[in-house]
Length: 84
Image (tube, rainbow, N blue to C red; front, side, top):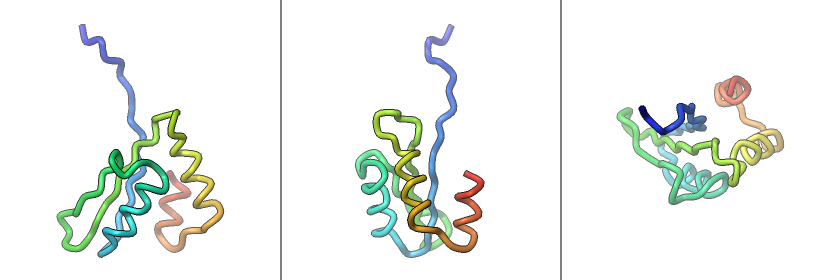
C-alpha cells in the first residue's frame, strides 16, 4: 500500500511572450525564485512561470489574490484570473 496521501497540487501558471525577466521577478515576488519554475515553452519566445500554491507556510494564494486585486490585469489574463 502506498503511504503517500493523494493530493491535488494547485499551481498558478503565467505565460508571457519575450518576458523571461518579468516572470522571474514574479516568481520572487509571490514565491521563491529557487522554487518557482521558469521555463521557455515550445512556442518560440513564450516563457512560463509556475508557482505551487499549496504551501500554507508561504501563503502564495493570498499574496497573488491581494496583488491582482490591487493591480488589475487586462484582457484575457483578467478572464483567466477570475476563473482561477
